[in-house]
Image 1 (spheres, one colour):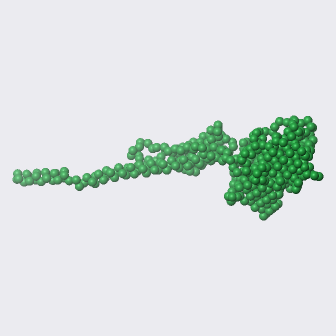
Image 2: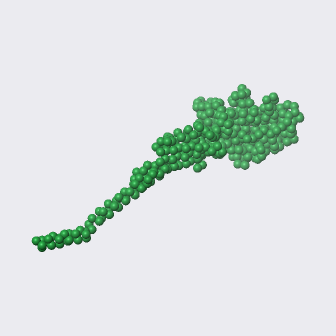
Length: 466
């Protein structure tokens, strides 16, 4: 019996020794522990990746909301409830509703520079990382936008009474009008500030070609008849329902002057100087109108010395049998409610020519013609923007020999244009800015404006700045 117990004890000792020395289960244990850690790190990576993706979504929503707010504010600045509402709606459309699902959307406006800032934050979910974190993280994104002007290729602007800075937008039909067999080749862009659905109209067999066409409204119904409308070199660059384009000369002021008697001054030939004037008027001021050249008999030449010439009331007339050469000259057309406001008539003909270049600097730099903003508009004077029957308030129909470098600026009245262009000198850079405009005859307009002193026509769009 004792030997049996001894044998059993010896066997148990050997078994214990073998178990102690056995390493066949270590790999499985280590693998289990490692797998647990690997899965933990993988889970953390999944959570972090989800947070980063959420951050990108937040930034995209903030950018879009801020851009929309600046656009919705337009020219009215802030505070602006409509812009704020629009921004929060954009954020909601991207899935971020203020106060829901841990999201917070804040829209603020800086009245000093009219910038809109949108900040969106959202509490992030915890999946695997709840093993390591006691509270969930919050992802956030921020964006700031404002309205900013950018230079454009525009050289024609029909204002239609729009005042960009006061938020006033015109709504006249055919603020830009072509008809008959008129061909207009604009080697720059055309803008129409009317919000009317037919703001730009073409009819008959007319043809309009421009680098771009920028409309606050639309051109419904045009082109009509056999007329055509195209952009080149980029086809179909016709932008509709755009923001109003600001008047680049809105800050320019009519110079002071005094008048004596009011009567037309006829200057038929020779040199018009800065000391010339109508009776009793201040120098270079003509009260009651100014007629240059002749309309019959032998052709004449009139040279205008550089400077500013003021015509108060009456008409500034360029006659049909004269060549007028004016370098560094601005003609200011003004007046009052008693004597009326000056208008312009340029009479074309085989023996007529107008070569006018505006000053390149100074208070009237870039302005060839500057009509007073107080002049009655077509809508208040019973006038028309049509060229038919000579009805337009201002006629510039000098044809191919009507060469003007500078701005033809009639912010409150209509013009009827039929002018030419040149690759150099007078006519190489022509801006047309008026309440409304019509075209007669074939016209080519160039915009080679470096060094001419004109103010560029800029379009205003929202821009992200942060």
